[in-house]
Length: 482
Image (cartoon, rainbow, N blue to C red; front, side, top):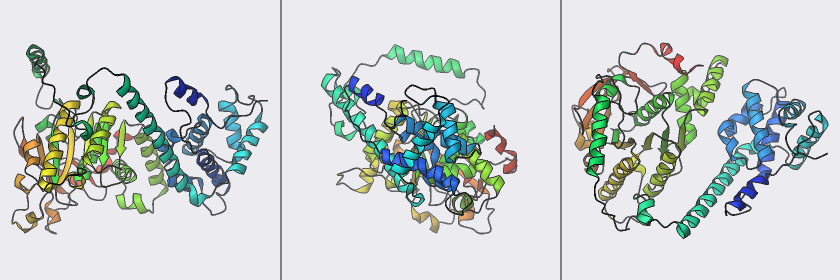
């Protein structure tokens, strides 16, 4: 009787047919160990040692599934996570029985009635890779790293193949923001004026019957801001500026979460926070649990249930997060990849942490280059790009602490290259007597319309912005529940 296969040979056949490298790196030992860690942790649930939730929380279960290279390992891991979410046991016998029912009839697998073979297969996994609960985070990181290596090898192979065979000029198919090719001669092409006129007339027809509340861009979820801007418009560079801890990341996450819930894809490049930190903030915003307790606990049983439900919902949203880039060329590259995978809105947090490799000029010139190319990127991909930026420290010495355009830090080109500049202000950050829940969005620049001041509510416990007229948070949260 055929045994279940641990490695996936079909992937190698596909790679060979496509002319890609054979023998891409794998971490099969880590895959086996993580599967065993969940099974063995289930058996310790009564013993006071690491439990299944502990193990899965340690390695952030759902996003890890795609990193498994072996098809059967990936299927088993997906099944374990699914059973855990539904409150089902993951002990050895229960898992073997579930695997028999789910995968037993597949090609090359044991017969549907052969439970013993599945038990033997799982036992072999445990013998080959004994689970060490304190090592799961290390092996999860190794698995993700190996998956990233496979992706980069495939991309490099495809790039080599295209360089050797594509007859197009390089300037026509490489991003103009990629520095390796930034010095290629610019192609001066004649403008097709009738085509552009047709596009403009079509847009006029679309908005001719719209009222002031109609959105033509990606919604932020803040009604007054959306009414002023019409949503975040494609091709716009939108700068979100403020002093440290004023809520720049919270504003970006609030808008991103609202856009995601309305079906828009969002790509988030975080130069400061890890992906896990951003996801914790989204969970706090969705469920209304204090961010500090989401990070450190303690949590009630109801809160844990709601957080798990919200996490499952977030996992299905069209969001992409990159948290390992700080130099602008790699940030631009990540943005391009996320666009090609369906992002309708790009967020980069934040400008002050980015650099240009090998740049020898003054910092304000470096920042100027980055903002120009950020605008070019938004225009090229026809998406709104939100770019967070800090403002100068000198504002704290002023009588009126509301920031102005000249407070933008490091370079006047930020004001020049942006289409919209939104500055965040919370008086309570400077005056302890001011209401802590009041905040202002100061639209200091709007290339295509009027500027203005918009009052919003600020919830420091959950790091979330909301409409000024919004009722208590509890009345707003039902839209994420299914």
